[in-house]
Length: 195
Image 1 (tube, helix red, strand yellow):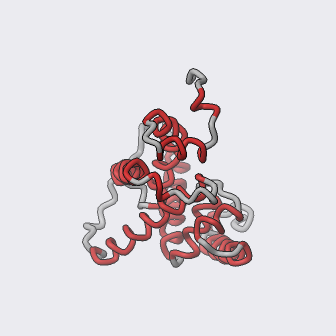
Image 2 (cartoon, one colour; image 1 turned 90 degrees about the vertical axis):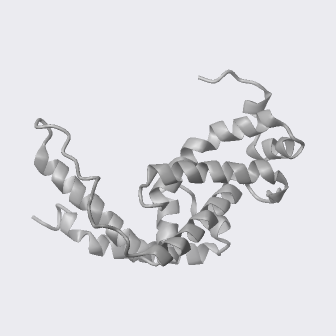
C-alpha cells in the first residue's frame, strides 16, 4: 500500500501540469497509476506479446516525459493517454502488415500444466481463446479497437468516442456490429445453443 502524499491526491490532469514544469514525482505518480493498466492494454492489442507490451509501455511513458506539453489540457488525461496508445498500436499494425506471413505456424502457448488439471476444460478454454483471438483479428481495425476498448479495457462509450475522435453513435454502431459478429462466430462455444 502506498503512503499518501500530495501527488496521490492530485488528479491526472494536475500531475501533467506539474510534469510540464519538470516535476519528476508527478511522473512517478502517473506511472504508478497507469503502467500496469497500459501493459495489459498493449498485451491485448498486440497479439498477447508480453515483451512487446512492456516495450510499448516504456515508449508511451517516454513520449509523455519527453514532451508533456503535447497533452491537451482540455481533455481527460485517461482518454488522451489511450488515444496516444491506440495510435501506437495502429502504427504497429501497419508495420506488421508489411511483415505478414513470416510466422512458422507453431503455437508455443499451448501448454497443459499438469496431469491433475481437467484436460477437457483446458482444451476447450484453449480452443475458445484461439477462436476468440482469431475472430477478433478478422474484424477490421475500427470494429476490433472499439470492442477491445469497451470490453477488455472497460472504457465507457463516451471515453471511446474521445479516444477515437468519433461520435458516440458511431461507437455504438461499431460495438453492436463487433458484438454481433463475435456472438455469431463463436456460437459453437455457447452451451445453451449446443444442448
